[in-house]
Image (cartoon, rainbow, N blue to C red; front, side, top):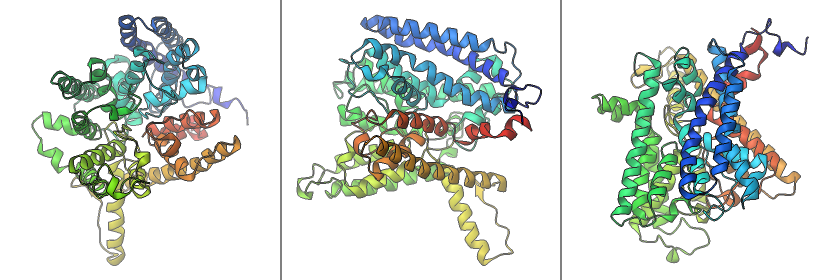
Length: 523
């Protein structure tokens, strides 16, 4: 077989030039995002050259890629390739500010390409894992830290969804692109034109972001959040709504008052909810939110896990190495509920914020959080992991199997929201979930082996949390990669592998794996 079949256009069924050209278009317009941190850099007088150079490089890369095919014709196969390449190229372009700032700043770790790429991919995929080490304005500029926040906000609802909403070049074939990118089994078409649907989703996303900014800054103005100044009030909603979790504060949300934590909780819940339900609420059908099976399961799981964790904390059983009678939560109802609710919602929605170091929690309580890493948000939300809807369908199908075992002649379709699901969709959900779990266990072995190779001790629990946090786009793990620590100590090979996990986790594995099959390219 000719080894160059992949580049032989006469034998290819995929017009890769069209995909690359459209990636260039997206990157070219995305260069405008650098103007936001550039404005902040000008205001504070920090890192101005970093963002001028980064913006220029993004324009050059975008224009160069766009010229590969100035008049692309996008089909379904090209859509898969374009979506996968877009997320990879955007992360590569987004790492430039980290490289430049790391080379000239006090945080030399960011000057290493694997670290810069890790931070960028973690941002755009809304993972929230970091290799920055010490996070402070003494080491990093206001502009660079805001760039971290902005990458998550851009990646939350989806770069392709944004591109479909604003670029006429992508209006044709936009539905396939959004299906390939959107987290969950599929995205619901809310309006006759897919570009209008994309705009509706982004308007809802923007609306929640602005509302949270107003509420957080309002708390500051009335004296309930002294350190929630304008910068923090803008920065944190940029990572709440995309379920990202980056914070310019080293101690994450622990740095703020209980009032701030209570305000953030419902926005994390909203970010983990199918945004299509908010559109139905706004168009006169608010009961649809409460009737939705996935939303009921989502809030039910959060409620149960919160009650269990709050009970542990309230009874003094939730902290390790601390006698129950000395627990800071013993008898504190408000504190127990707030910390439990915040951390459970943060983990289940894959936001990754922390309002205390949950490394100090007892082993049973931490295993509850590890379980939450596999739950995920709703389909059509900005959350990661496996997703609630898949677990609902799996449980319903298992119940059906038990029923048909007793009644083999019965016809019992699996229903979701009152409508029967196609067997093909059910098989797809089982296939994805199995593939996700296989990837998880194989990746745990590889991460442990790589750490052992360089003499870096990593417990099995820490490795499991690292893989669950990166593949599920959760962010923090346990132990040495807990919420107040970072992934900096991992070897470069492990970091690059986790970059891969974040990438395929955000695209939900299959759109990336399909590119590796010869059948995709030739038949």
